Image (cartoon, rainbow, N blue to C red):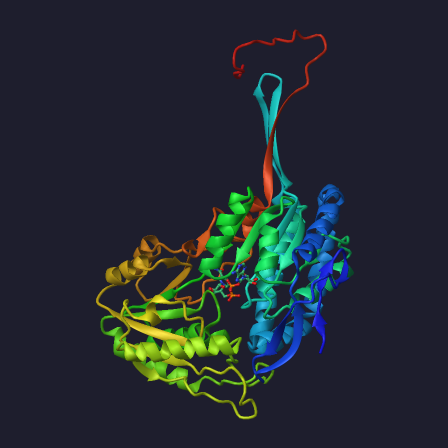
Length: 498
Ligand code: NAD
């Protein structure tokens, strides 16, 4: 069985630790490889490589950096199939979905190709007589990314293209469940001409993460994952003086108003709830059906849930693959049981699901639970599986209040034909990303991505303009070039404009 190694200073790195974690193919349920779990020394080797590469990379001209990004963009584009296959075999999502995540990551690379424009500073002429003022931004140093299993290519690509374009060097700690995509990406960076040490990959668990959080050589940490770990990363990272953006979990609601077009809403709800087996941070897991929309939308969604083609991600006919691990499967099935015993009506039941030829896979079929209330576990927990809970509500204002009383605030959507209701919704919800008749409103790369409340700890959203702000810090220069014959006009009072 092959062992997936780290990538340090432009080449595979075995390190000293022989601890490993199994990597499964979720469709077959079989272990297909293993990944190294780095020791403190192994992770420090990655940080050291990034530290050594920083002086030269940060002094490389912004145009030269952009050229490497353009080359990397072409290489990722040419290797989409290879990346997608690696993702499907370790995550389980269907190939078309895996390609989609690479393409959304590629959009961030394309955004970062514009780094010469993005880093343009400000200039003010003659702020005082003979004095000019200007500002520009500089990279931070070594920055790290710690990423979740559910988007092994896209989420790291929310981070490193912008960080590297800004002149930082990068250490990626990917999820140990699907680590292969990160190494393909490392090879592509090398082929694109990125100097060794600018992009490093260290694999591991809490030991690796804590080494990053405690290292005085790491200036900033971007994290994406579950809320308890996001909170921990933010607290420990900031206590150690680092800049931290830590994106957490989610419970995304979609409101369906009685004036919504039912078939349109049901098609989109089913895709948003069951796509990628519900393992998207922007998946819709709670439908809030308002008034007379309730029975109509449940009936239409049930029909679509029963029709979802579940199978191996490698099968072009599949619309939904397995969930990532046996533990995830057991947790999700247990939550459906609890939903039923706590009074929910399981109208489409994904328990006991099996796919012919893949009997050992980690399957959970599409599931709809109606009449869910806010006290139930299925409502309170982020299920992260193909389970849609339907909560009934009497009005749009009651539905908005429900969303606002939830601790998460990542994404939300409304289905309606009323511009007035949509506007009330967009202004009223305490959520970072909002869709109007768009169920998975993931912002384009030239906007920034981020939630509110327990879905993000830290001040800056990820990629887009806020990403550039996160990975750089400002300098403001106040300059005077006195004519040699002028009097100095120095004074002991506080300088004011003349
Ligand atoms: P996770 O929190 O278990 O793991 C994320 C990362 O943290 C991994 O690299 C993992 O190795 C590391 N980690 C895990 N336990 C740790 C510990 N005790 N100490 C230190 N590090 C630890 O998340 P996951 O299961 O891989 O991913 C799913 C979660 O990610 C869901 O909650 C989902 O909502 C969230 N997510 C959020 C967004 C977003 O944009 N807000 C995007 C994708 C995923």
